[in-house]
Image 1 (tube, rainbow, N blue to C red):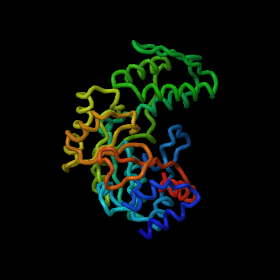
Image 2: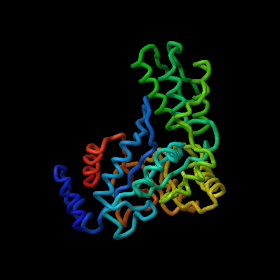
Image 3: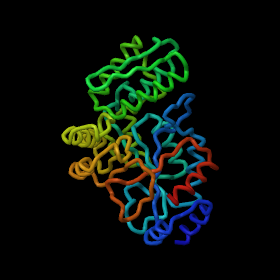
Image 4: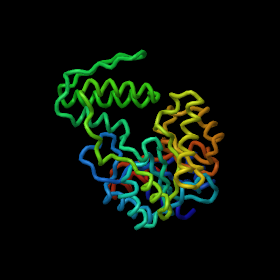
Length: 327
């Protein structure tokens, strides 16, 4: 409790509600942090990457201020105040750049893997959009998306128009089922006259790299669906296939039981009560979401909140962390 008092004392510039203070007295909170990538990028429109220097500084700050626990240990009385580290998706830089720093600072982490692209040259679809819309020099002057449910047009002549086009397509593809998403991407490919080669900087892990990651010190592995689709857009049967398929693939590749899961995109609108029930039925024991809050022993183990971390230098990270303790 003294540690929690010290943490809240450092956050005294932020108003803490009486209810939050009472809950924290009943059970000290755990913060679960969400990362995606550790690498240096010149273009990162989704703000997924933290540079290695900033990541190292963030971990060192955590090590000097609060206990760091495994994701498996959250939603357990007496664990907090503490922080848990998680990663989503399965980028190769998780192994090549994040893991060496995690091991150097002796910090455990859980990696949630979307299995459909592992071992392939396929990129996540948002990188295809980035390469076509934002990085390609010459494009037709406008694009019209047409399918059975939607017809919409964008101009592409200026940098500002391309930014609007990119973000509009991200929103549409986020909410699309896999076949619908592939159809819209195919329209975009045809319009642009091809997509070019995938960018090596954005590649996912090979099977061997995934096994090396899983063997890392303090590493645990969880599932993150097969196709990284918004589960609320799918039927119950399709959701079950996404969850069980990623679980079974990981268990086959790694020869270990997979009991952890995270919802793609992860906001409350991205999954449903049925999704949560299916997650339990498939055999997962805990599941991570993507909305900010603290975790206590009474929190729903199938909707564990997480705080998204951006490419913040140590001082700004410390400031953001102080705010997380009071939200």
